[in-house]
Image 1 (cartoon, one colour):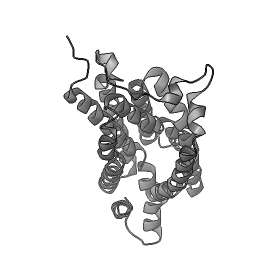
Image 2: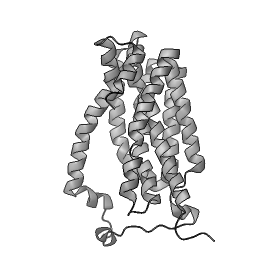
Image 3: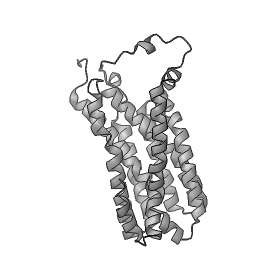
Image 4: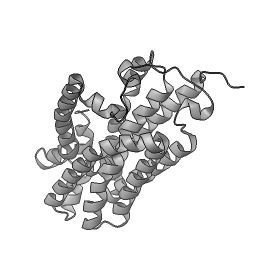
Length: 269
């Protein structure tokens, strides 16, 4: 007979799995920025990469809304698994078939695939961690995007220097697919799916929600939500500009090697 609350070991396992998921999402998020100068040296157009990075950003922004709803409908496990495998396949496709069309289409659509990460990984933590401990757990859990970005840079830099840019896309694609399969095998959407229960915070406004009223619309009308969204939008522009172009700038203007440009770009993190 299972206890009402999930054991700490099981909750910890789910938090660690979701941490690993978002950590490795960065392996197929940072690779284009790391390899940009090498791609241009190989004959790819700078304008094509600009358009691809822009398309990626637009797809990522749109996908953030879609992916949250997807996770609510099918569960974060399927959403994370699908996003990681498709992102890995997009990377593999360009590594195997390095055509400009694959670069433009595959790595633009990668924005949609990558967008499944944040809302669904956070949903796992919200489902498995008691609300009284969630702030402390999230404080540690949110290092996944910092360390994931750092390690993704270093991994891509090493592969770029040792084997060339095609292998960057091949290796990172395989890694992300494998991690996605691990999520599919071991991640559990919520305690109730394993026969446990966890106390949920009760919200007066949600309990008294009128029929036909959207909880999303209730949330989006909160001034603090709008303020945080505006602030994060500005931060995101700056962060992703550095992601996409700092290694290229270091290679072109500071004349570092492609490999060292990637290593030095870690200073931004």
